[in-house]
Image (cartoon, rainbow, N blue to C red):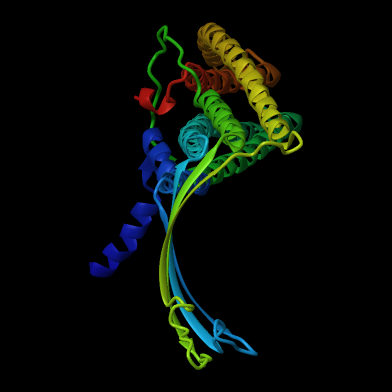
Length: 415
């Protein structure tokens, strides 16, 4: 029993069906590309911490040794000196503040970029998920058609033996059956591709998926896409970079305190003269310095102007992206309306095709209709089944696109 359970558990785990929300949530934690975005966010956060640390004073310590030859009363043969220096920038023209602002905006941009990418991956998963559902529905329709054709082939074979049917009729059914088998094989290949794509995106084996739909759309107030917010944050970061460059033309005020202690060896002594007052073995020095760049040939202003144009370029991209979102949101609304009409038409077509097929099947088996009419009715029924399911799942995909361009997360509307 234990051996049997050990075999069944992996099989059950492998064949587990997953819902659409589970697929998306697993992608958010396991997708390598999303993980790369998460690492970018961490990197940007560390950049903010580094910029904040710039406000703290710096402390440096060191030891150096010198050896001189020849020596005199003020130049020992060997000297060992230990030193410590503390520096504090009292005013830097706003450079630290600008660099911190730049890093904070870069961090904000990284967060929005990760969120935007997660939404785009969710949209891709939804598309693959419903395309997979479409292929499964087509496969079922083709298999039903294959069963019908197989039954008719057996029926014709019996009639042929009894001399009530011709060889041509058997060939006709067999040809249609073989073509249907090819379509089945091709659909299975498409299914396999869809499953592999979903596995790559989500990290889950999707041999089976649960049936999910998205909530019926209502009029939503659109929100700015994260992709646009990324551009806005980047534009602000570039603006701060420009301010950091401009700070070079403002006064720079620094305070430093240095202390050193030395040990002297191989000193030279002169009779009647001591070197103790000439060689300082320790000293503390406090320095306040004020510097300002008066001329650099226009380098700073040109660098600042170059960065300003980068910001203007981003602002232009933002305006275009906003117009594009507005256009796509409007088109997504109209696409939903068109798909609803298409769905109603596909449903009516399926009802008509199913009814026609039922009538022609009875007539054909009663000898009142030829095989051409029967096969055409069967083909129309199969096509109508596939078209209805495809339209049904396309509607779900279009709903996700509508939510996306409304600035919402499609995952939140999965039912």
